[in-house]
Amino acid sequence: MIWQWTGLAVFSLTLLPAGLAMATDRVPARLRARLTPIRANGWALLALYAVAPLNAVPRLAGANSAVSLALTAVAGIIAVAGCLLAGLARLAIVKSGARRHQSGSFGFRSGRSSPSGRP
Image 1 (tube, one colour):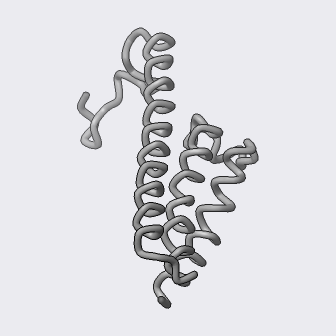
Image 2: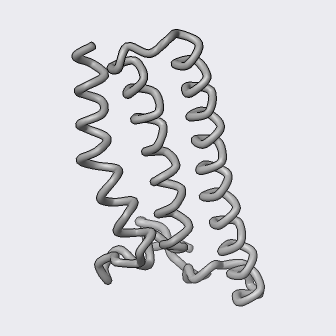
Image 3: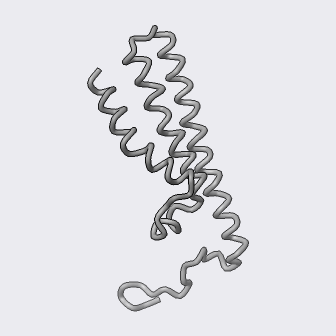
């Protein structure tokens, strides 16, 4: 029982604020390029956070095992949906980047030399 309280507290202190900040587009400027697309990643993070309360709260409340199992299955479906959302959003960025950069470099310099100085 202590592990469920601990997990719920840890996920509530880490994933919930980060997901809410990203879903509302409140991200520091230095992280914007790395977290693109911000809103989709925020909703995906919130979907992954939803697994913790859906899994822990029924067990902590002493719910029937059938209810607990059903909510765990729902949590798994929501987690998969969140992962698909993040993946599809990232795929859309890559495809739009491929159209923008016809060379296929995606913003990287193509003539980068190796550490020894040779191309």
